[in-house]
Length: 279
Image (cartoon, rainbow, N blue to C red):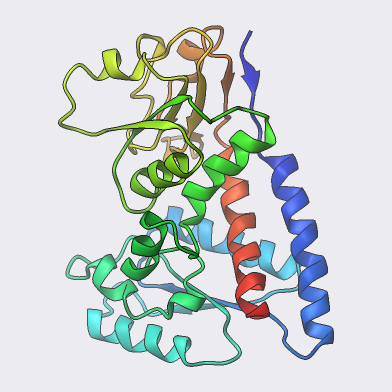
């Protein structure tokens, strides 16, 4: 039987901690503030930004959405990020993707003060993470580890396979798993015999951004599967990178989409913001 490794309970607990911390900070004269910079008309992105803003407001964090429009130039985005980095009322900065075609996220994210880089987008933050130094990890990658811990999945000595090598999820998740003494394999679009590699995993992290790419043939009996994918469907729903129907009954545990990694990611962004406000 496949256990559902949900994230809603964990996320609610994190939000409760955040609300307490935010109230303490406000009482001490430092109300935490979060800014989300947007330069896209993508509706799925807009939905995500709205969910962050709602969660922030419920926990006592002031959230401002800076919409520069889909025609914003890289220089305009860079100037805004630098201004927010210098604003003492802002403690967390998120650069929302996708960006205009001529904008490079890694280049622009370098303008975010690492102390306020609550989604770990600045290359300096990623470098510190890789080196095992203090830094805010990308929240989605951290959510993978938080869910594994919440559901009591042992990592030391386990073989973890991460499908996807983005700087948002795949690479940082691999580094976080290594820090927990897992043996990590990273797969990508050029990996040969993908199913053969993924079937060797005790813990399989799907973060490739292709709907239902991974099926039962990719999953070992009793493996734990963390599905990071959030792929929109024509009817307005979401499906993951894992074919849940195919994997159910084979995997020991599987995160749902929605209701798995997503709510934990949002909660961790808020936790990072109050941590930044504490200084």
